[in-house]
Amino acid sequence: MTDSPAKTGPLKGIKVVELAGIGPGPYAGQLLSDMGADVIVIDRPGGSLVPKAIDARGKRSMVLDLKKPEAVAALLKIVATADVLIEGLRPGVTERMGVGPDVCHAINPRLIYGRMTGWGQTGPWSQMAGHDINYIGMTGVLNAIGKDGQPPVPPLNMIGDFGGGSMFLVNGILAAIIERAQTGRGNIVDAAIVDGTHSLMSFVHGMAGLGQWRTKREANLLDGAAPFYRCYMTADGKFMAVGCIEPQFFAAMMERLPIDREAYGAQHDHAAFAKQHEMLEDVFATKTRDAWEAVFAGTDACVTPVLDYVEAASHPVNAERHAVVTDGRWLHPQVAPRLATQALPTHFDIATKGADYAAILAEAGLGTDDISQLIAAGAVVANKD
Image 1 (cartoon, rainbow, N blue to C red):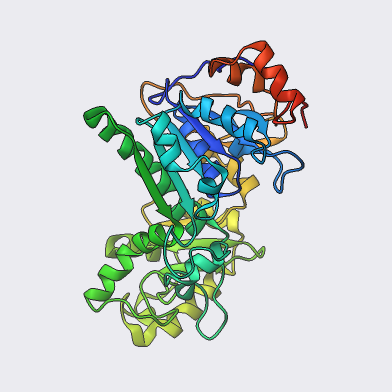
Image 2: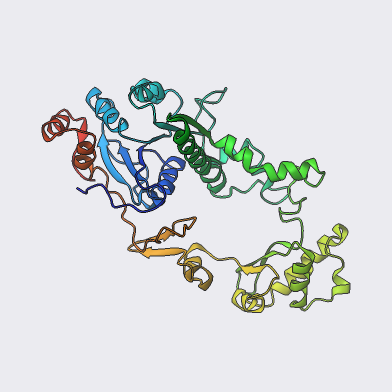
């Protein structure tokens, strides 16, 4: 069992209660923890769908069986001392459990109640299950990614879960913390993945409003249609990423390629795009990825290697910034963004499920006898997984 962790960062002194979940909720908790918040995960009895990993770093854990009234009462004791609560359950579930916003605000009016859903708290699909691919499919993102005439390509679960979900939940929580300093009262943050993902599409909507974006795949500036913004296979079956949109960057690329500029044609000659694609495919196929990296290193050509995540961790560009920290079995992405007043960690502790119940409950005002009674009632599971 561990004591309350020694935290540094701008959120030091902020206590966050995170009801266990998967994906965007835990990642939001990780980001808050990385910035110094004391994040307490309320885990569920039994096995976890996803074992604790990097999104549990810097957190503490206790196991409560919230089907038992004693566990709900204990949770509300913890909530009474918290600044933020994060939950990612379907709309109405926490209300039925007895830990909804009204109940929590009655005991702690300063609490910021962060809610993470896919479809939102209201609407015809609010009670329907979904995953990242479903959410981004309903916002126009998925349809825009991939080759024309072929099925759209899922961009992992980065855009919906973590971009449209976690980042907007954290943004709302931080805004509510600032507001609370002025009003003295908490708030409810309704973060829906579809809402956040729609917001991420602002650039596309803006381009479309200017007549510069189409709904068709491979027909736009940034979707692989342009020869100067796509990936090319190299001689060793790897890839280079070409992103020289601006004319000066395009010129820097062309200066380093054995291509006849007159035969290639103008950068934005759409009628020549098919020919230009072929010319660039042929030339990039003549060298290995590492050879091409050497050609373009230190230039403004915006031509860089495509790395896998293991290669990325050791690449000098990332290694110099300690962007990924090797810590035991894990490759930990470094805390981001970086604040001048916060030292970068070189080690990350990952919460052990259920290990911190005694310290957490003691901080909430429960004595040894109270904790023993909770354990005897099965409301608190004291064993470690």
